[in-house]
Length: 175
Length: 175
Image (cartoon, rainbow over all chains, first blue to last red; front, top):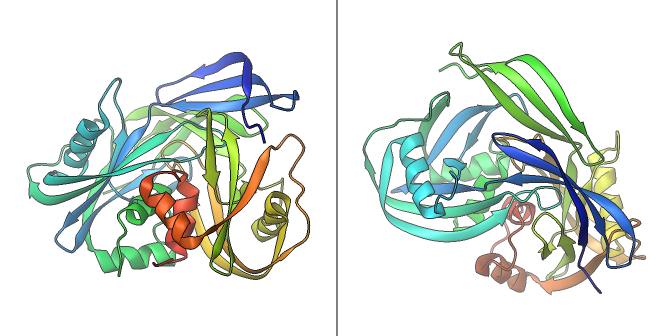
């Protein structure tokens, strides 16, 4: 089976602060022509920060769903930023913690059907509190929950954030 | 801490086949005004189908990344479609299997920062082969891999699809 899809034309529909949107005309391997709607995103980082048996979570309003959600600390890459540097920056900005031990947990694509968003996952341990300084206009609150509680929140559906489940899965957290 | 964000104005930028894109003007709880770029998506379903100790995976070209990816069978909800009906439909379309036992694994938001995409997760067991009939223009190949292999592919980064990791996490699959 031949899987390639050839771009015939690519139209930039919207060039925003967070996403760019393209509508591409493509040719499938069967010769059939179709369109693809593609969101381009700079990518981001997700940090599973463990303070002994506690996990750092952040709570914030997520406008697309109009819901307050619990998630692992995370954030977008700045232009040209190295993912590991971004992970250190975001953990400190959102929770006030620096970590002495970091483990690379690979990456995931959040919505491969229509978006190129790539999230780099990290585990951070040996935490030390410095100070918390979220971005301008970022209203966010940090919490520390026992790992057992976080896993129960995943099971019960109180945590519904995909990247949070992905980082826990890759970290092979076991009960 | 007050988390609400009030919509002042909502502009539809693009109305596509897969996504709609809005640029909203919002007021934060601090009184500060800003913009939110929001992708609206109809949502979808993801099926962790277990055939004894084997997992059904599908392989397809993902245009946003220009990569061939392994993922759990999944698909978009049709207009007004019940998620459970969609899960049965997608499993059969993509793999040719029907399942006699279904378990609801809740839902996840794939990219809560900029998209309202909500994916409903299911576990399907007691599979019976009927026939495989992907959508027009959908080039997709189904595989059966031992669960152990799938978990190794998640660890090694051969599987990088967020929804696949989420369904495995929620199913509390253990080695």
